[in-house]
Image (cartoon, rainbow, N blue to C red; front, side, top):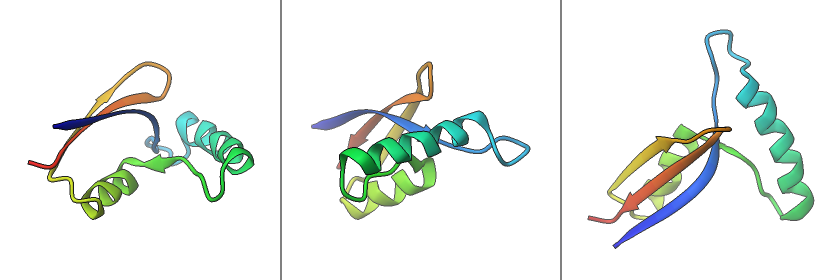
Amino acid sequence: GKVLIVEAIIGKDKEGESMSRRLGLLYDISMMVYTTGGKERTEEEFKGLFQRAGFKSHTIIKLPFLQSLIVLSKS
């Protein structure tokens, strides 16, 4: 089986402080208001999470407006 996730993935551009990073910080504030310890993550942070959860492979497909489709598989 596979797990599909639609999630914002924050990142950096050449200057180091991209629009997606600034929007990610705003999303962090929203997540903190609605959840305990919630935050937006970078691609590297997501990769670590997937590995710790036992997923062997993942594919990230960029979608419009900071969203990405993440496809996870344990095989």
